Amino acid sequence: MSSKLITIFGATGAQGSSVLQSLQSNTNKSFKLRAITRNPSSDSALKISSSGVEVVKADGWDKESLVAAFKGSWGVFVNTNSDDAVFENPEEKRTELDLGRIVVDAAVEAGVSVFVYSGMASARETTEGKIPVQAFDEKHAIGEYAKSTGAFQSTAIVSPGWYFENFLSPEMAGVFGGFPYTPSDDGTLVFKAPTWGGKEDIPFIAIANDYGDIVHGVFLDPERWNGKLVQGVSDISSLPDMIEGFEKVTGKKARFEEIPWKDLETYGIRALDTVKHMFGFCQESGGRYYGVVTDSKATAELKKSGAEARGKSGQDVELLTLQKFFKENFSN
Image (cartoon, rainbow, N blue to C red; front, side):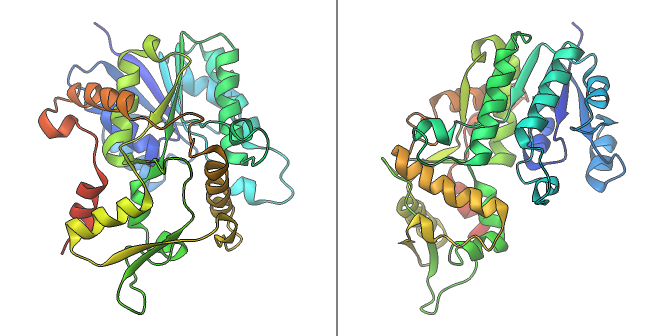
């Protein structure tokens, strides 16, 4: 049985890297892999190439280069970057939706069968127009556009939640009060953030550990997930419960402090403005980050399927928990 070619758009990013690593270790060698990058000479691209993955040069704004890069692909995984430097230019008129349409059109022209996109629910639709969030709304529109073409045998949206890995960034910690790096004056690690809304069921995702396996699971049975939004969730928790779990496994004193979502400081950074309005959207929608109630059942099934295809077993086929992540990274 010949291997099916899967091409990754956004291969050097956190999501793309996770997908590549999972698919590459499929024990049945079910898939051949190709990685798209704008700069094949970059350290990250060279690392991918040295691992045996084909690396090709293409630009998301250049449809012809994308068609060539997608040629021969049975499936593609696509993650467009809402925070690409091109969008920082105040004179730039092109949007992420424009980029997404080019990528979708190229995949259609190249004859791709399975289109897996890292998309989102629409904040505008979920809140009935009260709190739009550009990144969420445009990613949602890209996924809907891909479905509307009718050209793919399967179009699946695998939507990532709040990255575990954000807690590994001292810069991000500074935005939220210093947790888990910088103690307050009383020695406590403080996490300052708005509440989520609804049942406070925040979807957290371990990108490196779980996201690639979840996408892998979709590629193993793409027809089943056609037209669906898969909730990319490793663990579901409120912020107070998250802090309690952190204290339990690390022995470090910590607390959660609620702030109004409109008071979240963004420092003029576009990505943080998205985070700020994400909180507003979730509060307005009753915590419905995915447009529906958060649920990890399908994600756990996909994780197991993808991990088993890599020869994993036991706890290695289970989703990573926040407590285990905190214990591994912040216990002395």
